[in-house]
Image (cartoon, rainbow, N blue to C red):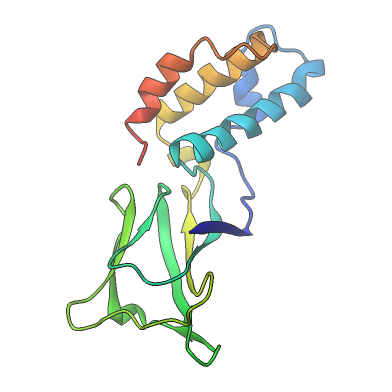
Length: 181
């Protein structure tokens, strides 16, 4: 199982001006460092918590169909397609009428309807491809508690530029655990 980025995000949950409002001593000369921290914290939320804040498109690649497909990312905006490589090496698309989705659970789930069984894909690596869109539709709808945790992590990274760990990690982790899959 692996994730492949198809379309990268074009916006971020936090913008530089709002981050600077939370860091009193930030100057224009600090803009590049703060921007790196914004990107780094959002990446940490993806990698450490499975929280994908900004819209992006991914492929989940599987070797075969499991009973239920689990997507360990939150939030999932939509499932674009479920495809597989058949025994002849051709790509086939499973009709969305043949599966049901639960995009609200953590992890999100895709399962065949009762009257359908997943097809048998070719015996090869990454024979099943699930394309989906992650993230919130705009930064304005990102939960305030997640933004609060991000502000804490960015401020701590700004104040403590040595690799000693983030002091507010415990508080931000407590906040983010609610959203973790």
